Structures are given as C-alpha cells and as structure tokens.
Image 1 (cartoon, rainbow, N blue to C red):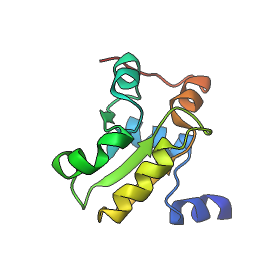
Image 2: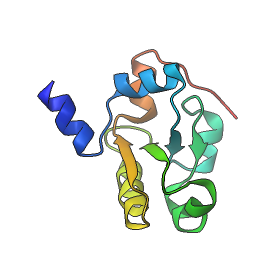
Image 3: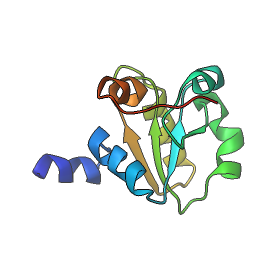
Length: 116
C-alpha cells in the first residue's frame, strides 16, 4: 500500500490502475509516445499518438494543461515516455503520469490493444 501511494505521488501509474481507469471510462488522456507507425500498428485502447519528437509542436493543440495525462511507450526499457513526461511538465502540464511498462507489459498481462 505504501509503495502504491509513493508511486502515485511520484507521477507513476501501475498497469492494474491504468486498466481500471480505462475500464471505468475515467476522464483522462492516454498518450502513446512511440512513433506514428508503431501507434498505427498497435496501441492501447483510447490512446492518442503523440511521438516524443512531436511534443513541442503538437502538445498544446491536443492536450489541455488541466487534463490528467498518462504517457506510455513500448516497455520498461524504453525511455521515450519518461522523456515525454518530463517535457510535458516543463511545458506546464500539471497532472502527468508515467506508465513505465508500456504496451508490452499490457499485452503480456493479456490486456487488449487496438489498431488504427
């Protein structure tokens, strides 16, 4: 329980909590930090594509500073989502969380994905 509270405070979100948010239909923006072709091939349900290299030019058009934002990429070893979270915070987005496990972690657990 203390670990979960610490992760929430640090801007991290775990797979189970993310999937509960998706299942409940919570109001938040799920952001895929991978490349556009990777997103088109497969992404988490409801995610939008915002590749790390496009954050500076597109973030303010597709996100609001008040949005709850969850960013992911491919896996625990991928750094794109972590870097994107930091950049979004620098840009003034206040409620940004990082899902470090990425799409590979969700697929491994049997959660669904979708294609564009």
